[in-house]
Length: 269
Figure (cartoon, rainbow, N blue to C red):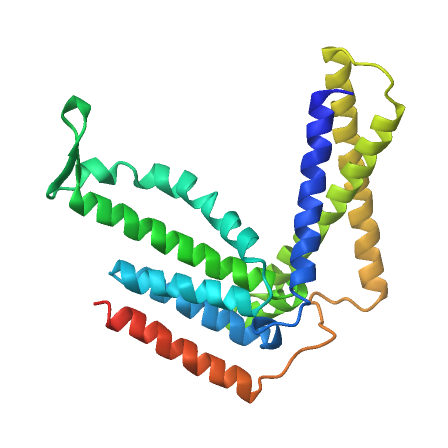
């Protein structure tokens, strides 16, 4: 069994596990799960905007602590929630923000080789950027984890997102899941038939055949799904079984978020 095939199986399994985990969390009994998806979309967007408009680190850190509190109240595992954000944010955002440490004028904090120096203003700028991105990603992830995907897509209509775009995104998500399951079944089927180590040329030939078969099956499946949708009354837009209704709890939550967002922006200024 080749290492590439083993690695592909592991990655596909991990993606499927993450998808199933998100669906399972969205159905738990928690604070955010009990709110209307449309209200959650608007309030999450308001908190993200507030995090990016706030100019002081304590205000942004307070919004991040609020995200952690909401995750705990919504039965989201805090360890996994924190790791998903902070294992990626420093890597990508840090690489983009790193030049600001030495290019931003200000009082010198540390002297570096080649005549470079880390400035206080640059360090504050990088810290604010990391906090803003980490808080924004945490809030967005919290929205995705606590809302079933079909309900989240339909809630986007409150932001005037076109129905066609919502449908395309929803179908794309489902097709990715279906293709992952197909690829996983094909890799496992191939693994069960391999009894010796393959040569490099044979391995490339096998992977090309799997990719071609997967593409053909995806095209065939898309045609069958479309015909099935047409036969069941699909006419260009989807319908949800539970459209939802805004209650007094949703209104109270929206008012509390509006107050927190206003305080984070105005007080920090």
